[in-house]
Amino acid sequence: MISIRSVNFRTLDLNLLRVLDALLREGSTVRAARRVGLSQPAVSAALGRLRRALGDPLFLRHGQGLVPTDFARGLALPLREALERLEALLAGPEPFDPATARLGFKLAGSDFFAELLMPRLARRMLEVAPEVTVQLVDLVPESYIATLEREAVDLALIPRMAFPDWAEHRPLFRSDFVVIARSRHPRLDEAGLAAGGTIPLDLYCALGHVLFSPEGRRRGLGDAVLEAAGRTRRVAMTLPVFSGVCRAVAESELIALLPRQLALDAAPRLGLEVYAPPLPVPPATICMVWHRRSTLGPAHRWLREEVAALLAPLDQGDGPPRA
Image 1 (cartoon, helix red, strand yellow):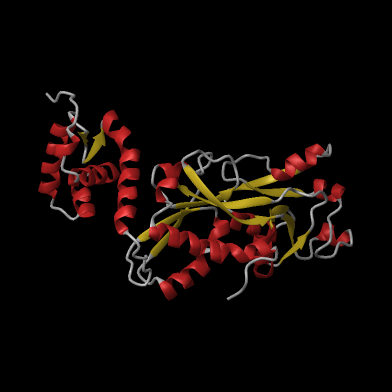
Image 2 (cartoon, rainbow, N blue to C red; image 1 turned 60 degrees about the horizontal axis):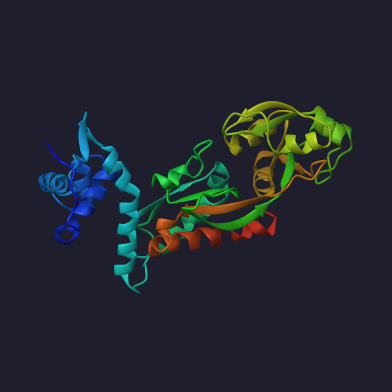
C-alpha cells in the first residue's frame, strides 16, 4: 500500500518528471518510452520510483493502457507548463531552424482554412521547412478551444469570442458576409439583379437558404439580423462544412450567406454569383488562439508568424491571392 507523504524536492530526480509527462500524454509505457528515448523497462522502473516519491499509484492498468489517478490528472497541465517554461529557458537565444526541424503541428479550424490556408501553407512548408508536417483537424462543436487545453491541437482558428485566462489570441483578419447563388438563378434573373447587386429583402426572405452549421443549429447571424428588422428567412438545409454549402447552392435554387473571401474563391470554380445581402451583417474577426504555455516556444512562435503572414492578404477584403 502506498501512503501519501510530502515530497523531498531536493532529492527528486527531475528526469522522472519528463517520464511522468510522457506517461500522462501517451497513457502507455511503450509509447512514453518512445517519446522520451528510453526503453520500456526503464520507463516502468521510473514509474515505480515516481510512485514511491509522490506517494500515489499515479496510473492504473485499464486494458492495454494506463488510466491516471485523480492526483496524476491534476498534475498534467501544471507539469506540462513547467516543463515547457524550463525548455524555453534552457533553449537560450539559439533560434528555431525550420529548414532542419522535424516535428508536427495540428491546427483546428473549419474547412474555410482547408481552402484558403492549407494549400498556401503546404507550398510554404515545402519551401522553408521540408520536414515539418501540418495537420488541419475539425473544430469540436461547442468546444472550440477546449482542444487547446487538452493539448490536442497547437492553434485554433476561430471567430473572436470571450477567451479563458489561459488562452492567448491574435486577430488575423476581418470578414464580412455576402450572398451566393448559382449563375442564371431564375428568381434573381427575373428580378433583373446583376452580380454584385443587393438582393431585395422580400426576395431574400422568400428564397430557401443553406446554413453553415457544424452544430446542426438552424439559426445563424443572418437570422439575428433579419429578426431585428422584423423579418425571417427559411433555412432549407444545414451543412457542417462550407464546401458542402457551396456545392448545394451551385446545384440548386437555394442561396447562402458566406464569408466574402470564401465566396470569391469558390464562385469561379463552381459557377456561383456573389451578391450583397439586403441588410448589413456584422463582420467576423477571425483569431488565432493558442494555450499560453506555448507562447515562448520558438517553434510555436515560428508557426504563428507563418500562419499570420499567409492569412494577412485576407484582411484586404477581396479574397486570397492566386499562386
